[in-house]
Image (cartoon, rainbow, N blue to C red; front, side, top):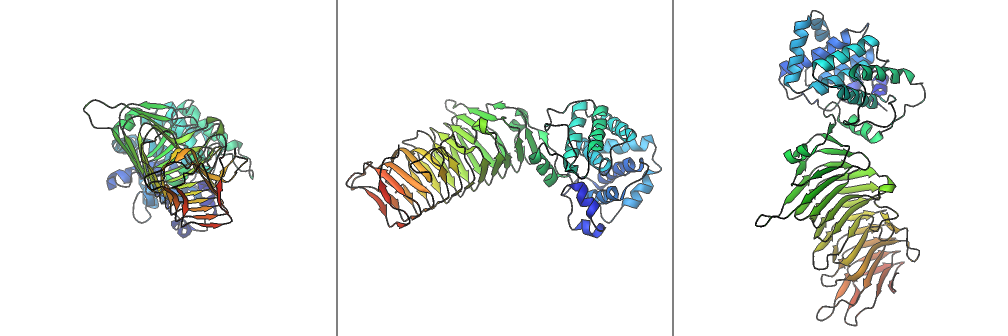
Length: 491
């Protein structure tokens, strides 16, 4: 249910208070600034022939989100009746001083388009307001697009991001009215960009999408809702904390890190962030730590994308979640890797190996995967994991992972391409449910022999190996329920 439906169907004002809006982006400003901001909204509503009940209800929610106590609607409407141009300009300057121009215009668009097409007079007023606040024509078109998504109104087709808003300021507002007028109830309004609509609904009026630039990354990202609509090339370390990133299909943040003589290796950190449709590519040297993050999205299969793709950059993934449809979650080549406490669900692409993790050549590098869960991940080979060398997997669970390209073992979850190192042992304390494991070449031997799998459970799952050295043990203290060890080389 969109915002307009919620406001129309609420039985009374008390019911609305049960579902408040997120805290407004201006809630920490001074009370004077918040009152001036609210007064401008009241003035815009008062300029109409009449204020509808849904508009009044939404204004009440916005005032609550602005942390203006009680219900000051009546007082605000009374106060703005006596405003002259100088008073209005003073209020708008307060908005500008608080860097709240975009927030004000978006709030105004949502209020004025809430339950009826935007009249010509209101469209002109909004165009003049945007011009006074210093917002260009593309910015107003962008904000009109966001308002339409929030209200469940038709948009002009392909979703526009901050860099692709088109049209004049006045024309955009009027175009929004035309869109609204063309809606034909009771048919549902089209949603050309449901992910953006979802993010806006979750965050408005707290956050408004901003177009991400290289300068933003270099400054460091702290919070905010960011739109990545083109490939960004960056050659310095950057960090992000507590932010949400929405990637337009095909867009990438490509970070290249060169090791300078005598300088410490570059260290990047991403903490507490949400990524939708992300393509993060790292090449060179240094390290990246990803902690408490969420990666999701429905990817274009033609891209054959990875959410995180590292060549030479050490990866440390901690307590993060990956649900990336039609894309691989992580590719790591020529670098150490640590995965701790992560969840991978419904990840993978039918033409890529390693639905959740693809580990390239790193024979002498540590690649540790612990306390992680892989469920319904799928790939060409290795639904959960494809690795040149299988190193250390501990206390992990593999559930219903498949290999679309393997007729010999379609439920292959973990595939080793070259050989397994059995000094840890390679796999310990894991559970495989309808998800098989391929150790590949089991001839690797330490002094006294090696154990490859220990203390693990196989439920309707097979354990493959070939060329076992006589001193080696394939499985120790393992249980098989509907599965077994099979001496067979998967081609």
